[in-house]
Image (cartoon, rainbow, N blue to C red; front, top):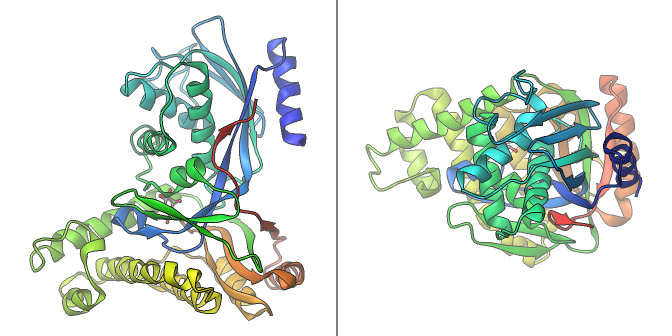
Length: 391
Ligand code: GLA
């Protein structure tokens, strides 16, 4: 595979010998349950066939060196420089290196060892696109350090540690969905995760349906600030609703009926954010039965409703995502389409009848380009295996 050859070659040129190991960790796409993982809700992602690949070997020195091929940049750090977010030469760690360094930080917090390594990595998960490129980088480094030392943790534990790295080292208050999907992906299956109990099951993807991902190629800045604000609004809603519903711990515990009764007591913006979460959790409650009954039509309608809610209540869409979703939903063979991931630009996800998928991709590309002037990237994806050591 091209990307593996490329990182192996660059590794040999940089470090003077071939890498001993190769690991891969996929990105993910989420079909339903958006912005509810941090509200203890249910999510329905799949790991995708795009991933971060890392070539690595133990190093003789005590410093870990990384080369990010896609950025053409290098960084090096050690357990001693981790707390100050600096490199071996005392310069600040570049932002992109906070993800791998955060993984080292989270492992050290756990009293696990993180042997020094030389590594080269590259990804075909587009950055900032809502397909969890960051989680895939984190999980690739988890696998690397796990490989170089004798500890072994279950995939869900690795995912929780990667989430901790992102929350506390990188500073994005994300939920567990992305790291979970990257760690636990199963080929040709959707993953249904209860973000409260962390129990999960797989749901086979019907054979006659394709997941089509389309990238608006639009990226918004300041996403993490807006993301953290959305999460804070949900927490604020819980605090206020507890005055009438003292037993609730998160929006997961609020029924649509109770919410309708109490919504008027909340400030407008908080009420909109919380309504999205409460209703989205209700939608995901229906998902399993619909998929098991093969009722893709109805499931697709829930995806469409989800987009409207993300656009109007959660306000994480943007004009280009809305245009793309409108065109997608109007095309033949499309069961449902919506923005996927955190929003603010990036990708949409569509469920499309298999035999129409190619035609759908072409018409969507043409329509979107003529309305916006942007060239979209469209891929018919396969649900893939989670993070793994390849060699
Ligand atoms: C980002 C976060 C996830 C999740 C989604 C929205 O991808 O990392 O934890 O909250 O946004 O569903």
